[in-house]
Length: 49
Image (cartoon, rainbow, N blue to C red; front, side, top):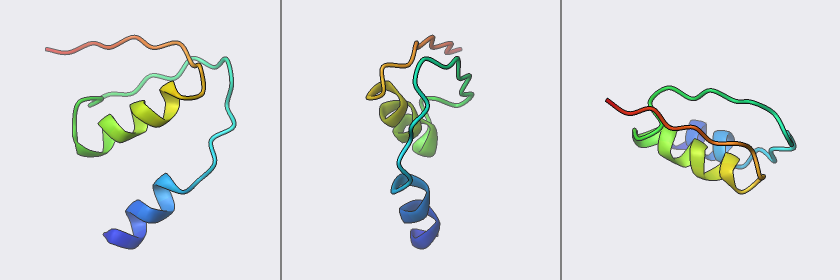
C-alpha cells in the first residue's frame, strides 16, 4: 500500500486547463488528489452529500 501511494503521489501532473471530475474528493486518496490537481490551476467543483 505504501509503495502504491508513493507511486501515485510522486507522479508529476502536467494536465493544465482540463476538466477533471473526482468522486470521493473528501476521502483519504481523493483529498490528496484534489489538493494535487488544485496546485495546477485546474477548475474545481466539489459536490458533497
